[in-house]
Image (cartoon, rainbow, N blue to C red):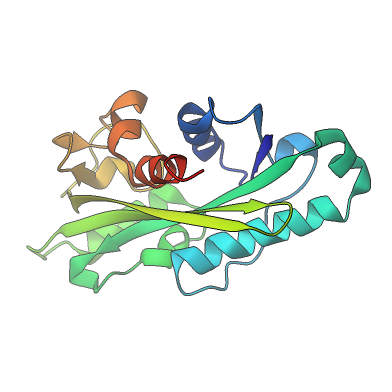
Length: 200
């Protein structure tokens, strides 16, 4: 079975391939089969947004007979994730990618540090929901959470998004300082994907 990932984020693709690589015959992104993954995320939960993205990509595939024929048996995987900060009552949550400027990781991190500048409560967690949508409409989903806190400044240059300002309690360093292997062992997305592996 071919797994098609509903994202254009190469970092997400690499994480997913590293974890699910042995479960599918082939894993490709929407880009790699000539489709887009740009559904508007109108949901209020991670699950709703992940399902919206997966459903949109599935619809595109079904409406393109040439692609459907070429890839054969397939399923679509989508994830929606974000950072939830206690002092902000769970925000930015589903709006993490557009907390300050949509798609601008650096601007969003700077804004987060400014918002929490004088706040002593810096506890936060990353949450991810993955949705696996089969071509026959069957849906499977799982969540993953990793706990930590927001640092006072950026540490490390690895990862993406909020990684370099998120201190992970599991590895006692920021995700920006972690190797890919260290992060993949404890990240919210990794936990959601590993939970998914247990049931598929």
